[in-house]
Image (cartoon, rainbow, N blue to C red; front, side, top):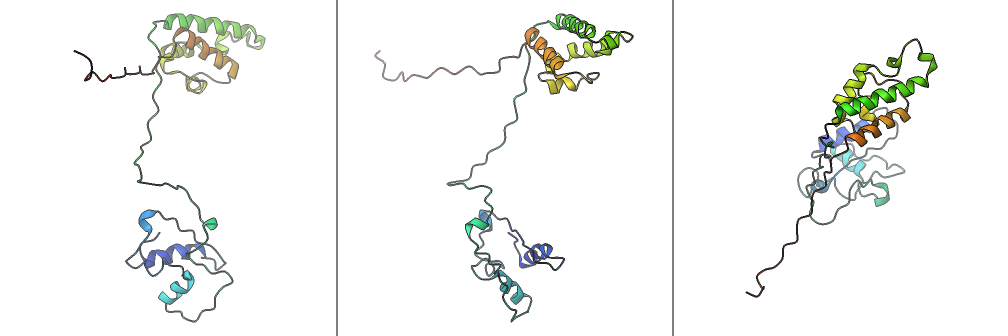
Length: 203
C-alpha cells in the first residue's frame, strides 16, 4: 500500500495512461493497515475515486457504473499468504551438497568407461573411420574419472566438456557405473540417544 497520497496517485495513474478503463491492483501486508497519517482518509469503505477527485479539487463528478471502493469483497482480492499467530522468520535452507565416498576406484572407473566406449563404438558402424573417440575422447573419459566426486546426475554429466549428442541411456549407464564404484556418501545423521532421568534412580 502506498504510504502517501502522491504515491497512490502515481500507482493508479499508471493503470489508465491510455485513457481506457483500467484497474490498479494494490498489494499490502499487515504493516499497511494505516490508522493515522495521510492514508487514513483513503483507507475506508468509501469510494476511492471520489476521495481522489476531492484531493485533486474536482468535485461533482458523476459516479461510474462500478465504484472503485477499497472495501471490496474478499473474492476480488489476491491472498498470497494467510497466517495466524506470530509471524516466523523462516530462512530457506541451502540444499546439502552430495558427496561420494573415497574408494580410490578412479582408475577402475576409467577402465570401465573405456570398455563402455568400445561397446558403444561397435554399435556405430558409421564411426569406423573415426574410431572410438567419435563416442568420447580420451580427455573426456579422463575428465569424468577425475571429476566423478562432483557428478551425481545426468545433468552434472552434461556439464563435462566433450559430452555431446550422447543418448540418455548412455548417460544413465555412466552414472550407474560411477554409483557402483564410487557410491554416494551416507549423509544421514545418527539419532542421538534418548536422555534418561537419572535423578530418581535408587542409589
